[in-house]
Image (cartoon, rainbow, N blue to C red):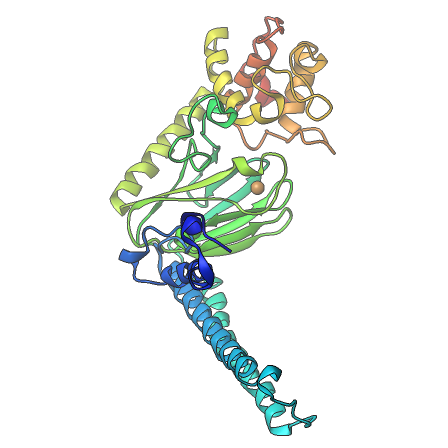
Amino acid sequence: MDTPNCRNRCVGPFSRASCSLLPALSVFAALAPASGRAEFAINLQPPASGLAREIYDLHSLILWICAAIFIAVFVPMLVALIRHRKSLGHQAAGFHDNQAVEIAWTVIPTLILLGMAWPATRMVIAMKDTEKEDMTIKITGHQWKWEYEYLGDGIRFMSNSSTPKEQIDGAQPKGEHYLLEVDHPLVVPAGKKIRLVTTASDVIHSWAVPALGVKQDAIPGFIRDTWFKADNPGTYRGQCTELCGVGHGFMPVVVNVVTPEQFAAWRQEQKDQLAAIAASAGKTYDMAQLKTIGEKVYAANCMVCHQATGAGIPNVFPALAGSKIATGDKSGHIDIVLNGKPNTAMAAFGKQLSDLDLAAVITYERNTWSNRTGDLVQPADVAARRK
Ligand SMILES: [Cu+2]
């Protein structure tokens, strides 16, 4: 097989053979020290936590063991094939079994496997050791966004992909962090043990950040846990890694690791925002205010299925423009957004969004596109219909 950049230089049997070695060599080059590794994109991401470093070292160790076995098996085999071939006059030996060889090729692989299983098992146990954590964050996977809840702190928010639709549609060039950027990243302090408990509200998702050495399935009806301790402040990116439906490629994970002081300030800011939302419960808003907030909530939560035009996707996701729900009885509209619709992709947003966000998005849907109901839905209307 030729690599693209040497295809024109591969002439004659020897140069062709050396070309075919290049992909294999590049795998070994990936194991070179970090400075020489930068130009290769086939290796694991540079580790940014103790766990990730151990995973990286284990991966390298196993790869070297596999490479050594490959050489130990295939080199003698090739030498024997070439030196003892029939055309040189060699005859096949007449023996049928050799007990010593059979015992050796059973015992040696068993020892090699045990030797590999020992560090691998230690690693898995270390990944599951969630004791003595500094903080616990509950992660819930939803189609197609992540919900983060800082247990004991009352801080809870949704994290949606923030890649502009124009980039996804190809109308704009793709950005540096295309489909790896979110509106609200997870924020954690560096050097602290963060315990993560994962679950999901609909189908199985998986929360993964390779540089931090974390990948944990989020399963509806179950709680799983894992942990990480980031070495240094920085931004680390990952994705949902369990095929979870049409929006699977649109639920990135972004973790902002900050200093403990920055984290304390961020935590206070979040608490202040929550207090402001709680204070907004009794307030009333006008059409322009509700539609401005509602447009953002719609883009983050509803647009993947119902589309920016409100036209939905025929035979898959219903249109909202001109629909009975978005133009009919106001309370029916509030109920379906709050509680979802069983056995369909329509999720229950009651637990995901605040009363203000729900009131705003429902008002937006009832007064956008061809919908002209003139209805205002206030946070108090939503609160009244929560069960
Ligand atoms: Cu997912």
